[in-house]
Length: 455
Picture 1 (cartoon, rainbow, N blue to C red):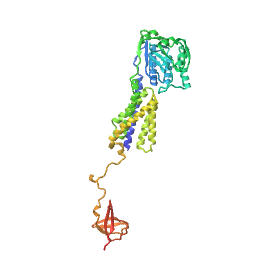
Picture 2: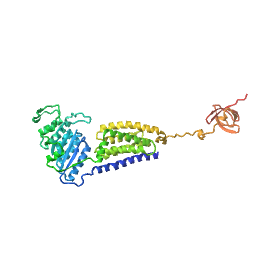
Picture 3: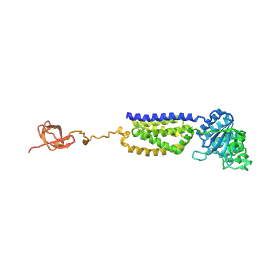
Picture 4: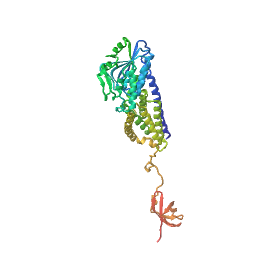
């Protein structure tokens, strides 16, 4: 049992060490710049071509810091996004507004929803033919429009404020958020009725003063900015950030749950720390690694998960009427779900992963059931006669034999059969000493006698 507990805690310690070693290392790698010491007429191109969330915000913070340190002349935001989280967009918008390096939003695809807010915070906004900006309604994680008046009013105010930064019509920004607004925009043909969100093409954006120019390439952007001949530096995500995007995808996340849960379960119930335990620990380490680098998970989420594993191990070896197990499951699930960008999606992935892990772990535990941890609590060896074990000498040979009582049988006593003294019992009757008896029954080691009545 002690050896099993040590194995369990060894599993937890390995998980903790892997997480502690991987995450800071990833953070350091993510901070490493590829630009060297180049300074002067340098223009940074920062891609905004993904869902807007905290991972993108961390990436852009790194990019803007790097641009400032290298005294970049300008930052071009290469935007093509369908939006994302409002809180992340607000953080990125503030970063763009407060940047010491002048910033231009280059919309070459779509700047929808939260993407339009980021674009409006830039000092200049240029658009490629065929691109669009707007449709910034608040939606839930499952794509349904939010109808709460306070939320709409708050986001409308933020969009209007971003538009006013550079003298753009705030009512147009408001119409991008609230479909029930009715506004008059002569450049777009007059009154825009309620019932439809406003989205502007590149040509429309030019007409209403939302776009400063229509361009076809990054070189055109440089010409518009008067920076012909400047060095373009494409600021790309680090290897850790690229890996994090893969690890945080729903499919990969579910696979990591299956590997993590099944591996740890197999390791706990099948002896020997080997491949299942290493795979299980690695699965969860990669999960938290990806979510930490992406900006979703914090150290507290990882700690909560490790506490959950410890509590589950305690439940196995210390009887707690299920209390330790319940607390461990709650901590484990909370740590995993809190570390995710989308809690509901993480919960669903965890549920699917748990179900699949039960099947995988169940197969291995059943197959290796004779080697598992339960054998530490169950005595499986049998002391069989054919194996050379003899528990008591058989007394079957006395059945039907006669003898004489040496003591009074009341009903137990001693008799003599041949040369053997034997402890016996009667069937309930009283037999005096020195009376003839006969053995009438053998019940294991129990010899039952009866008095022989002489004719």
